Image (tube, rainbow, N blue to C red; front, side, top):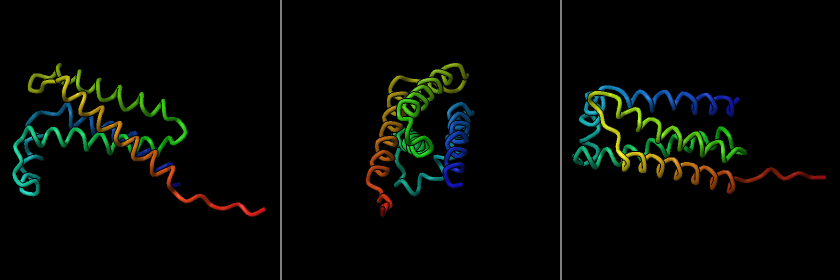
Length: 130
């Protein structure tokens, strides 16, 4: 049951990332102004760098837990999604996709996958008594 929930959450997270990436820039600024006091009023660009890495790290972690035995599939989903969303951003009138943003997203996704793989390796295994 938990595995099904994680799979659903992973696929829903693509839709959430797509919305946040392609929505009007005012949406992004409204989130920034709400969380800015908790981030010691970091400037918008610094916030964006961290937001890219953290969002895609969470995304990568979800997919790595959803499909623990399909690492290549997970990497393809994460990396293709990062690059595709960044490209699609160039097609919107008020946003701009950049190579550095795509790299931040790929890095975040890779960190999430690595973290999930490490957690899966370190979890205790049930002992089987003959």
